Amino acid sequence: MDPIEKEITQLWWNIYGSCFTGTSLNKKNALFMSTGNRIPSGSVFTLKKNIFSKITDKSLIFSYPTLRKIKGFPELKNADLSATPSCVSKLQYSNNTAIDIYGKLLDGTGIGKINAELQVLLKKAKALDIHISQWGQDLIEEGLLEIFLQDELSRQNPVIAKIMDGEHYIATDGIWVKGMSFAYQLDKDSVTRIAAIYEQHKQEFMQFGVTIDIASSTNLSTSFKYAENFYPFLKFRKIEKNGNIKMLGKNQGNKAVILSEADFSD
Figure 1 (cartoon, helix red, strand yellow):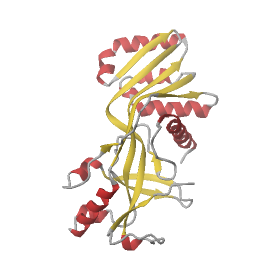
Figure 2 (cartoon, rainbow, N blue to C red):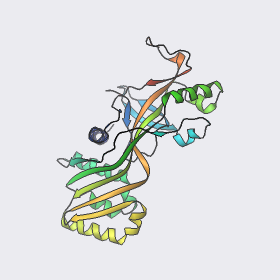
Figure 3 (tube, rainbow, N blue to C red):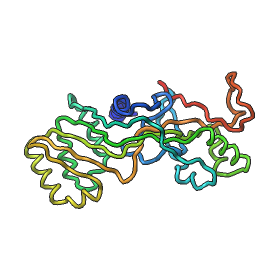
Figure 4 (cartoon, helix red, strand yellow):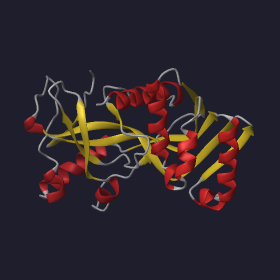
C-alpha cells in the first residue's frame, strides 16, 4: 500500500470512530474499501496478502446482485441501529501528504466528471470539513447464509463450488453512506470562479446530485447525494469447508460449510 493510500485508510478509520456509532466493525474483521466503492455487502471477494500478511488486493468474484439471482440466497437487511447521527470530521493541510489525501477524496466523489476546472479549483482548499449526513449498516444473517451454502454445495451448484476452495471471503456486513458534504476554505478568486462555474452548469450538477453553497467570499460547501449507496467499509467472513479448517476445540456439528472469522489485524 502506497503512503497516500495508507493515510486515506487511516483517515477513514478515524471517521469510522467518530461517526458510525453502534456498529461492530473493526480493523480485525473489516476492511476500508475506497471512498467510491459501490460493491455492497453480500458480495464475494478474494483478498490477496503479501509476505507480511497485509492485504494487497481486493478482487470481486461475485457481486450481491449476481448471487441474489440464485434462489434462496439470503436478502440484505438494514441493521437495527438506535440512531444514525450525522457527524463532521476535520482535515487540516499541515503538509503535502494531507493535500494529496484530500485530492484522492475529491477524485473519489467523481466531481471531475462534471467539470474538470472545478475539481482543480477545489483542490486548492486550505482546510476541509467532511460532513456525513446519511449513513447506515446492512447485513446478511450468517446462519441463513451457512445453510444456503451447504444446500447449494450438496446440489453441486457450480457458482458455489467455485468459492469453496478456502481462498474466498464474503462481506456479511457493511457501512453505507448516502449523503456527504465537504466544507472548504479558499481564496476569493477561486470562490468567485467556482460560483460562476456552478451557475453555468447548475442543471448538470443537480442531475448528478451535487449542490454548491457559497457561505462567504472564502468559504463554500459541496454536497453529494448519491443515486446509490457507497460502502467505505465491509466486514468479512472466510468461506471454508468443515474438513479444511482446524476445529480449535469448537463443536461445529455436521456443518459442511463454516463462515470463519476473518483476521486482518497487523
